[in-house]
Image 1: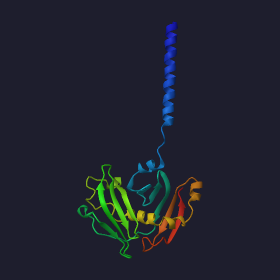
Image 2: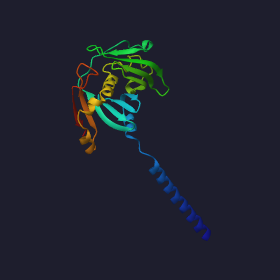
Image 3: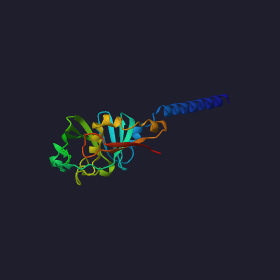
Image 4: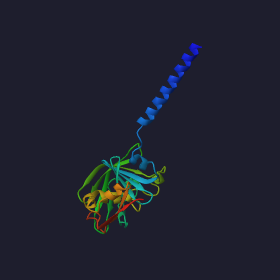
Length: 213
């Protein structure tokens, strides 16, 4: 009888220890970051420039993250006209996107298809700014067996990549658009609505900040 009690006590201690270890393991598992949660949602593509990640949302907005933290969402009120030197995979090197109104341009070069589904390339802006090892991955809606069948997602209209490059080049101007602190204080994300005018890199004409509900 005593042996049975000892055996039962031992099993009980083991069960309690196992549950305790399981609880500690669950507590030690970090929650998914805000960036990971956003990437898990349906999107129209992801662009990475050094520590900055742009996620092109189905709603037409772009979510901008710095490292793993959301900076803000933004959208352009008006679409910007542009022309491209090619939409063909076979003429991709040296792809140029041009603003027909001002002659401003973006030149894409040094393309490399990576195994993780991203395309890597460099971008030269007409401002003289050069961005190296930029990464782009089409969204799930564009991720077919032949992503070139209906044109390249980067140059198809409207191209959110152009908007991201404009935003990146206008960060100083955007800091003067209006504070996003009221949104952060209320625990909401902010969306900056931008009016750019004819020029891509000449400056933001107007902007407003909206707090999401």
